[in-house]
Length: 234
View 1 (cartoon, rainbow, N blue to C red):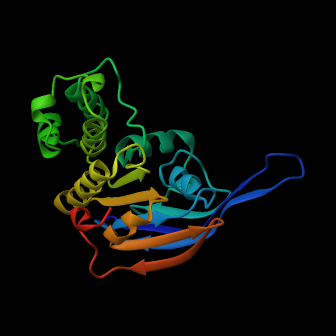
View 2 (view 1 turned 60 degrees about the vertical axis):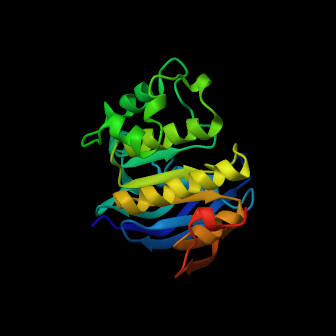
């Protein structure tokens, strides 16, 4: 079982010679495999910094971050690149699909770099878009593009799915559908899903709710009865 352990993770930036910004300040927690987690916080709370550290896109100033008993915080760039390619799936606010590739080709591109991927067309079916396989992103709605982006992330068979404001560019109804899809992905494929957001409505869907403020954990709550996203009053 893949356990994620974060221990006193800290990130300090120095925008000037005498200035110091502590974007993340001693964050610690442990997640079991298959967790569905929402990290909630206002702008400037440290959410993006935290996501970048978990995804291996940045390195901490201090602290440890273990996945599969390997301290990612101490990995060199070669290992970080391998980590991002094989262990992490990313879902962003603005989809980041390749515009000159079809929906299926976008997913196959991710499949081609993974070590133990799922089948791309089966993943497209899983997000309900098998009939849109040959459509380009410009021919898809925002919600459909986000579904393709989720399929592209999951097809790699990652251990950790990181979602940065995945509903931020969508209307409420479509956003709810995307959160429900992420819940289904977590349960069906037993993936650890972390959603970073400022949207408090998503909080009621979390099995684990972590509130960030000024780079620190303000609260960390296990929610015994998280709501399916389609039951939340958006």
